[in-house]
Length: 271
Ligand SMILES: *[C@@H]1O[C@H](CO)[C@@H](O)[C@H](O)[C@H]1NC(C)=O
Ligand SMILES: *[C@@H]1O[C@H](CO)[C@@H](O)[C@H](O)[C@H]1NC(C)=O
Ligand SMILES: *[C@@H]1O[C@H](CO)[C@@H](O)[C@H](O)[C@H]1NC(C)=O
Ligand SMILES: *[C@@H]1O[C@H](CO)[C@@H](O)[C@H](O)[C@H]1NC(C)=O
Ligand SMILES: *[C@@H]1O[C@H](CO)[C@@H](O)[C@H](O)[C@H]1NC(C)=O
Image (cartoon, rainbow, N blue to C red; front, side, top):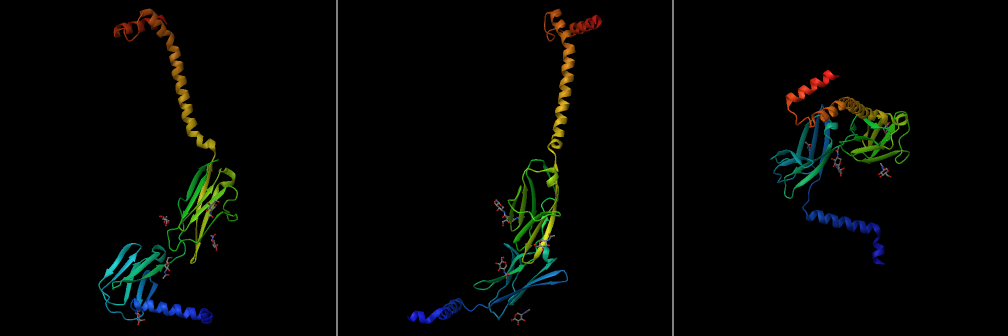
């Protein structure tokens, strides 16, 4: 009954009190304000503590698991400057205060997707599976991918001969049993996240099976012609050699060179 009287609000107050005590136990750590500003082609990332803090022996800036800047200053304010555009440097950065215990904050450079086609044009053979790929290396990841063919409705995953596989930085459109008339053309991958969208185009060309076979057929034809020529040549030579064998009573290899030459001359004269 007494517990019921405390109610949810009382419980919340208790939790806040406990939270406050836990924070107090760890030593009152000031908040870190982060900021990214874009000034004339420069990106200025900054961290600032909301209160003075003694005992800072330096700062470190990290991008992923790489240290990109370090210093030994004691200020509560620290910046990291990048030359270039947001779009080229998106990602998660971190400012680290060398304190005991260490304190840090995340500074994100967030941009709309920066989609690129893995290959601007793809070739496929009729009947094969076509694979078109787009990627997005920027931060944050893509939350929504869309594929469509020029002038057509967005492609629905699993419909017809289409299979779409997507993740935060990549999408893949597979077209099963490629068809020359239906599938040749421009495909667009459109990526969207909280900051906007971007799209890329992949051109797909489908070749007929026969076209793919032409080089092979060419080789086969060449071989056939060669074999025929050799065969005809051999056939025309054969009576001579049979004659040769009967005549000499021994294989041509055994006969000596002059002997052989004599025979050849003799045979040519006979002809
Ligand atoms: C950092 O934060 C403090 C406290 O909020 C403020 O007084 C100071 O001007 C800030 N420094 C910079 C360079 O913005
Ligand atoms: C930065 O991005 C990470 C990962 O998406 C996220 O967890 C974090 O809250 C972001 N930090 C800020 C300050 O926006
Ligand atoms: C996409 O993300 C995965 C997993 O996070 C990673 O292994 C892969 O290298 C990334 N690919 C690209 C193109 O950024
Ligand atoms: C599309 O469907 C396949 C098979 O049903 C599934 O594995 C895949 O995750 C789906 N892709 C998307 C983007 O929903
Ligand atoms: C991409 O998708 C977004 C969101 O769905 C839409 O607003 C935008 O017009 C599309 N852009 C193109 C080129 O398809």
